[in-house]
Image (cartoon, rainbow, N blue to C red; front, side, top):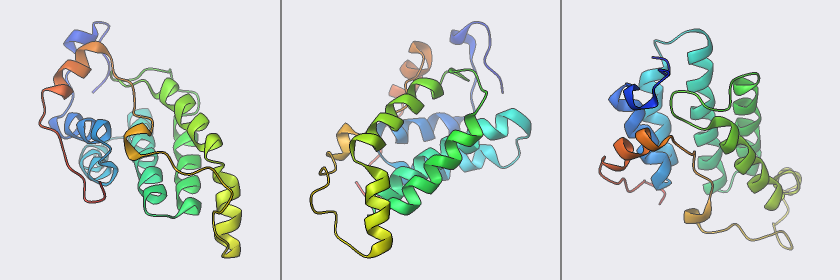
Length: 159
């Protein structure tokens, strides 16, 4: 599974496209479960790409569930998996999404949240988390976005 020179000819496993649909819907837990199905048998750079998607999704699950330490840990792992990759892979804008997630985590002061979490202190005085609908989603190529948009919307366990 690699990106064709013509993105309209890109063929992805149905579980990956369904996982991307879940990401667009903010159903992060479901996204990670679906993408794991595709990730397990892969190797090399494709494995790192998919594992980064999974870890980015799990970082948002942790944040959604009030665990900033887990969110930062998984986000850091995702960035490591994507290090050195092209900004677009298999129709997914991992470079632009990294930038958007990095800005999002800076905006909500994730490192301060982690420090307070470790100390057992409240988030009082820190920026309020924006509604789930405002959290960054991975950008997709136009062709992939059309296919993913055709998949029925998902309502997550946490959303």
